[in-house]
Amino acid sequence: MGLLAAGAVVLCALPLVGLAWRAPWSSLFTQLGRPGVRTALWLSLVCSILATAVSIVLGLPLAWTLARFDFPGRRVVRALAVLPMVLPPVVGGLALLTVFGRRGLIGQWLDAWFGITVPYTTAAAVLAEAFVAMPFFVVTAEAGLRSVDRRYEDAARTLGASRAMTFRRVTMPLVGPSLAAGAVLCWARALGEFGATITFAGDSPRTDTMPLQIFLTFQDDPGGALVLSLVLIIVSLVVLVGLRDRWLGALR
View 1 (spheres, one colour):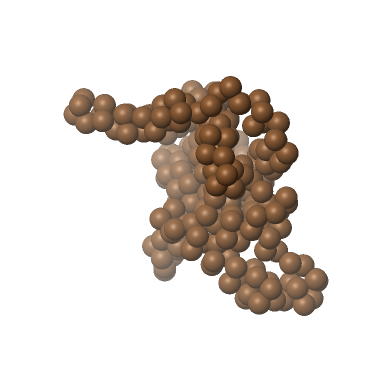
View 2: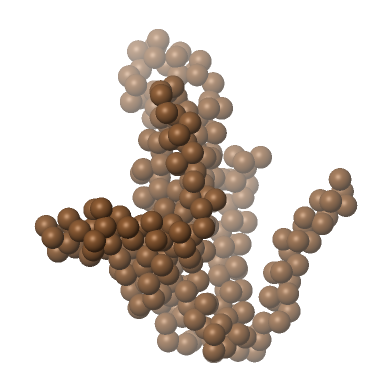
């Protein structure tokens, strides 16, 4: 088991070591100073945070429903909720186009009634990232809600607490670490999203997130793409490691 565990660590860590070894560190600041790189990093952070917020607002009620209620078709709903985890991101981007495109199920009415075009905008990048990242929050939140001892909630209700107060003062503190862990995983997935974003949001100054910038840079300057990849890895590692004990402890 120890050898197999070591093999798993090597499989995860060796590609990162290869990136660090081959990256032209001498051109780090030159690459960071390129037009569009800092803008792409900032746009990635903004879009991933907004996508995480959308995932929490929509995903928490869904996780609550799946964890607390037994209704016909619950397994189907759960399967649909986690499907983007295994769906190829490009397919997800095409699916979003069929819904929000100018001739899509919803997009045609948004364009005709309000003059709103979603694809190839910053909003499209946020939607694409939320689509692929929300399942990570839903799965973690549902697991946390299922693990809560319902007797604490029942005791609060018998002592006169309303449903809203019970949820706010009892349920949320108990499930809070799981929700935070799910939010961090959701954010990390959104930050690195590429396939759905380039398919649904395209490549423009309004949608050029860091993964897209890395892809475009790799075509002309592979060394520069390695440097930008390391920057994205460092940002993700700083957040994940910094919040590990406080938030990701809910996964242990």
